[in-house]
Length: 424
View 1 (cartoon, rainbow, N blue to C red):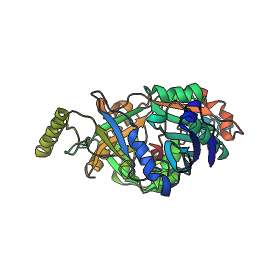
View 2: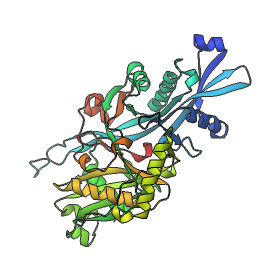
View 3: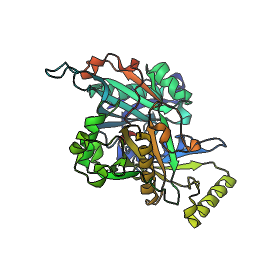
């Protein structure tokens, strides 16, 4: 895909023409990495600190594992020799749940069967970057428009994006100029990884499920969750998925002997919770820059105490001032009155997994604003984002099964959402 964009007045003065084209790794990687380094990923707090991302030499890492993906670059060409990449955007397309519907009443089933998911082909736009020296020239708008054209060619019915709620420039571009609607406000909750192990409550047991059983459990119980990927099997079998874990009360039948997902769902315990863990550390590393020396020294002191006296279980500040990785807890769900407490056991287990992985210093999760399990997820407010922003747009063209829902952009928020780890 190559698009030549007519130059603006400012570009004419500079003698430049903007070309929108597909990313080519062999010729573009270094320029894209330089552009990424110029652009902050987002603030990590006050005091002039900022969060930066190292994509480990693979600018496609955050979309590469999706069924269909593309990366576009905006290139300024001046004369015949001088060229510079001044903007980038990534996109991917997949099929997800956008709602549920009640099937027709069946004979002998007066109450009706359980709701079934409504699927829609959806595009996700992410990683929009424009060089600080070439902003306010419409380059970001052109990148979004060309990416949307590709998404429509792939049959996408909707497109969505995520940004920080205080990123006014991004919000103005997508909602003010591109026709997106503010849609969901999930929370990103981040827990540090300590030097000490966090014990699981004695009243719970955490089981690791075979991927086939994990798929059965997710499809049978959570396929109606908003944004649930229809190719959940591909997600669970991806090498970056470190496992699916089920927390159950100690003493229940499943805790004593696992007989498979089908048997479990036929006679489940009163309460249970499930979650999967994704190794984002293998894709990218984060780094907090701009922290004062006294902050770094204080954090180092807390780690020294934690390592020397682990039995005290003193919360310590991890070393976030050098490149570090994270584990993402995704596919969180549960049933029963004790599901929130069992969720806490799952996050403790994920913490202990991360503790054994050198360089993995935080565990993160993204959940709906009103998720009933949210209040038991451990996190540090300083490291978290209480209100992320997802924006959604209905694309032009023919509509598939998702059209039976009506306009998804106007749907009320559900109690929970499924965050695809391939796009985090």
